[in-house]
Length: 266
Image (tube, rainbow, N blue to C red; front, top):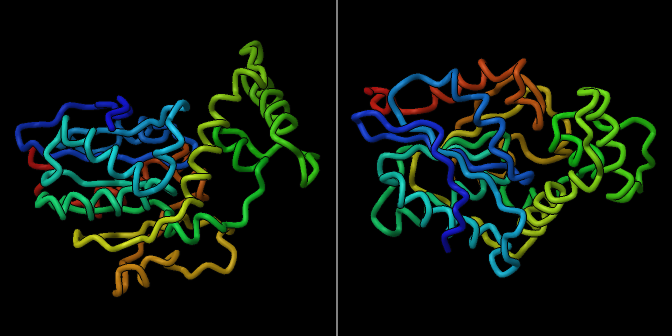
């Protein structure tokens, strides 16, 4: 199913190689745009950005992966593509790689940015206030009760955005479509789906300062899915901030280090 979600941030060079980024549950490609100036020249750069109006019958990791792979094939050769998925996007990227391999078009590499298996994503301890605030790049609002509903959270986030950018005029109604996208992807993470391994080289990049994965294993469940140890690297920041301006240069360097050198031939 083609949704028109794939953005071309930079055209591919003569090699035809591309890096395709898959968004986290918030659906935004903003973090990947921040990465762009720090990535080496050569490969094209693509990024998926979610549509708040995505249909309910596509609300699962498997369906998202199938849809996104169909879109990717229109703009890039999957065999010359590195897939990079952040959070929920990592689970989607692994399934995209597996489906592509089934079709005889194995991607070059899969990079998982602080991404857990679908089984862990669906049960990750999370404070909704922190998750929704992170969609808009602000800290979790202070003094919200633990059981605050979405209306209270969005009102608090709107106030935080106004404090950061006086006069911007954000209202809870302005923010609701983004929160709806997040909720849709949270349902997708919790939908019935069995993760299966891909054959492509796969690396897990953990956020060095993240403490919110509870008692999850350090590999966030991936070694059990793959039946082998998955290499792990570490980058500064938390799950939500690893691509913030303070950390994006380090993240870009680490992503480059995980990608085959032939992709940067221009």
